[in-house]
Image (cartoon, rainbow, N blue to C red; front, side):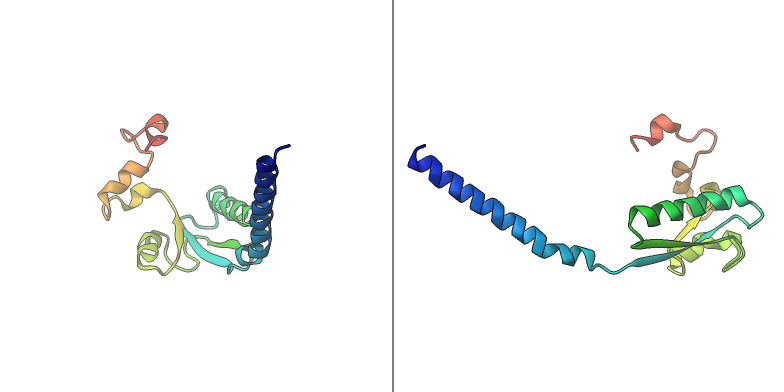
Length: 130
């Protein structure tokens, strides 16, 4: 081996060791981020358990994927607000999320129809690239 090659290997291994040490030392800062908790109201009353269950399934999946650091508390329609008030409550920041058919609020925001699957709206092939 030539001296130049040895010098390169020593320098490269030193740089990799420094990067690895920095990543290990910085790891607690990533883990130390605060936990997030959102409140989600649905437009569905408790009797519509399949629709409400989809919101609860989403909340469970988010919590599992985040290792319990992101939690969404799901409320059925009518528990913390009237079912048709959740769109405005989210816009005003009273709650962080809502779940309900977007076309119910098309009078408040006409562009919302582009994001809802309604007749003559975009099909799945159009929604994918959008």
